[in-house]
Length: 136
Image 1 (cartoon, one colour):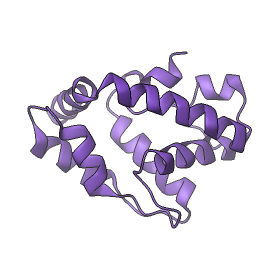
Image 2 (cartoon, helix red, strand yellow):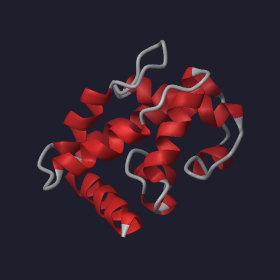
Image 3 (tube, helix red, strand yellow):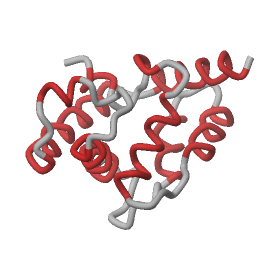
């Protein structure tokens, strides 16, 4: 039942995100690729769990550019919730998942990666933040 609820919440997040935001994320990913040096092969697998430091830096970079993290590695939960609840039918569920996954880790890239993997956990191929980037 919990998996079904999480899948539902992730699906709602996916459908509530504007196409314009997806385009921005693709742009952020390209900008971050130049900074992090992540390979195209690694980028195509960015949503799959890995200990690759470039992957972790890349995720952190994108979340910073999206306004979802600051330089200190703090997740900006209110900004994330605001973005994903626009037009959504279950803002409470979205907020619950975001807050559950917003756990500070030992470094900003670790925090970013944990957040993405936590939100993405129910169905790795359906994660929304990097959906378009990962499918290229």
